[in-house]
Image (cartoon, rainbow, N blue to C red; front, side):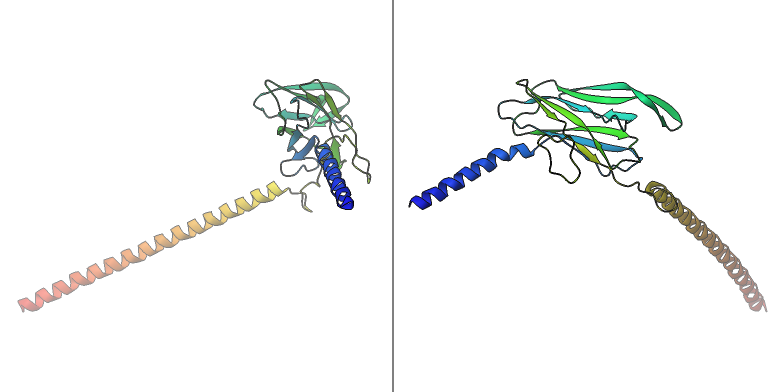
Length: 244
């Protein structure tokens, strides 16, 4: 009996530990919509869960990497949130589409107009970003999450390669290889070429069909004329026979 009670107590204690540890696994993260290909542009979502039962998330600050600055950053409006985009001078200007860029976005801040993200909910904050670097496999964004009780959680620890996840990991955007074939043509270019080929084939088929229709009409016209002449000749011959 005592053994059973000990086992039961141990199970309850273990369950309590798991329940308490569960919420700690949730953190601010970033994921692309589709792919985030090197050298391209992507739409990404910063996912923010609320981890407190007695407070709401009322502010999110996302700091952009300085080693790989992004020249183009456009936030999507989020109902109930104000958005502030901060730009900073670059130590080394970027060249994008033949133009030199001496400023880049260093931080984006979302501030709640109302209650923010309440307990048991999460919110996504979309951004369009680019041009993504070609010489990196990932981008690290350090984020600060502020609660309505003034508590600030700093998601700023960079993950170590091959190591365990830190207690307060920073959001990491994984980059994929650029989607080009051996000839350097992108997937969109190949799609455009395929569409052009389809249009050309369809146009040729329409032209051939129109030509066939014209030929058929001409043949039928000639046949009709011949039949008409034959009918007239037959009528003339019949009239002469009756007269004779």
